[in-house]
Amino acid sequence: MKIEEAIQSKIENPHVRAVVNIRYTSNWMSTTQNNFMSQFSLTMPQFNILRILRGAKGSITVNTVKQRMVEKSPNTTRLMDKLIDKNLIERERCKNDRRVVFVNISGKGLKLLAQIDEALQKSSEEILVMNNLTDDEAHKLSELLDKLRG
Image (cartoon, rainbow, N blue to C red):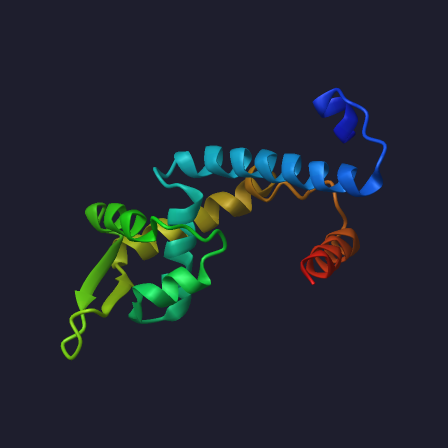
């Protein structure tokens, strides 16, 4: 569906059209991904934290997690608290500097990510929402978005 059809408005300026299209598509993708993650009682930012911790292959600081987040959030600590309450991650204060906090993914968190990975393989269109693009088109889109950010 063309953006003008989706928002039922005509946009003459191609740069304005692109910005509106990016914002609209971003919100659409977020909704689709959050709906998928809800079956695992996670939000996309929580999923992102779990993936960061799995990729770290060991304890890392809370600040490192914040730096690696796809969507920067002022409430990352609260998101981590919820993951701790679900026993998906573990937190430990640095023995040498009490201001530094380390986090690590738990075995339960790794199992949940494995379930999510399996579900993604079975129904990738639900979360990736990129099935309408060829690999070349997806690559070009990424290049254009990188260029847009400078």
